[in-house]
Image: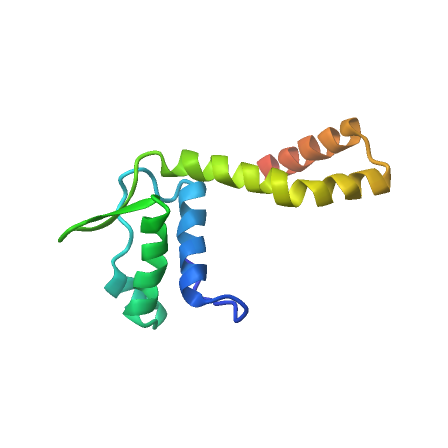
Length: 127
C-alpha cells in the first residue's frame, strides 16, 4: 500500500479504497488475510481505530469477513462482485462524460479500438 494520503478524503476511506484496488488487481484473492490492524497502524503511523473503520467498511460491504481470533479475510467472490459494481459505476457515472468527449472530438470506434490496441502493444513491449 502507498503510504501517501490525500488530504481531501478521510484516511479510513482511502485505506478502504486501497484494499479494494488490491482485490481488483489480484494482489489479494478470495480467502486471503488482510494485514492486521496493528501492523497497518504501525507501518503507516495511523490510529488503529482509523484502520479498523476502513476495514469495517469492507466488512459492511461484504467484501471482507472477520474470523474471530484470526483476523480479516477477503470473502469468496469479492473480486467478481467488485468488478460488477465498478463496471456499472463506470457505465452510470463516467461513461456519459467519456461518450460526450468522444462525440465532441469526432472520434469513431475504429480509431478508439486502434488506440487501445497500440496502447496494449506498447505495454507488452515494456514488460
